[in-house]
Length: 132
Ligand code: HEM
Picture 1 (spheres, rainbow, N blue to C red):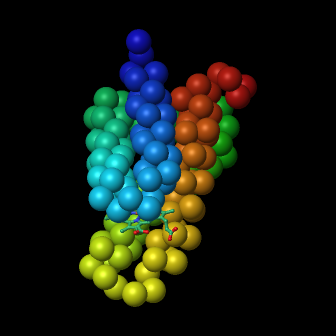
Picture 2 (spheres, rainbow, N blue to C red):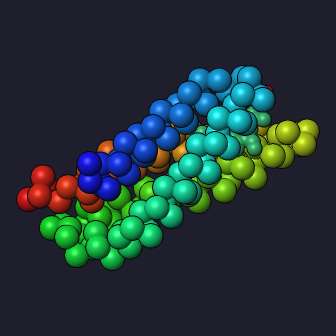
């Protein structure tokens, strides 16, 4: 099995974990556990990709359409930025701060869209021949 396939399977499992965490959004303890695990796993996945093949550099070489890579990077970098905001707002809710819940909710659904788009667009970056 190629490293690309292993990365994509992990990426899909992380997304499934995030959907499970959103499903359990009313169960605080479980929600926090699932989301924290998913975020840590996702960061570890980025490190794996970076250390095995220096993803961004290689992808920009093999991509037939650099626009597709840019769209993929927009969603994947956006997801990581959103993770930071999710942890910050989530911790504030846990600390009992008022008025953050709405922000966490809006950002949460945005994160879900961004992370889903990351998986969809990763097929462009990983399998450039399919777009040719
Ligand atoms: C990808 C990451 C995450 C997503 C997509 C996400 C999404 C959501 C959503 C949609 C809700 C429901 C809001 C509502 O209906 O009012 C929620 C609630 C909540 N989230 Fe997250 N979340 C994420 C990460 C986190 C993290 C890392 C923490 C803690 C550090 C956290 C703590 C909470 C808490 C405390 C609630 C309130 C639960 C309740 O209603 O009692 N979330 N989250």
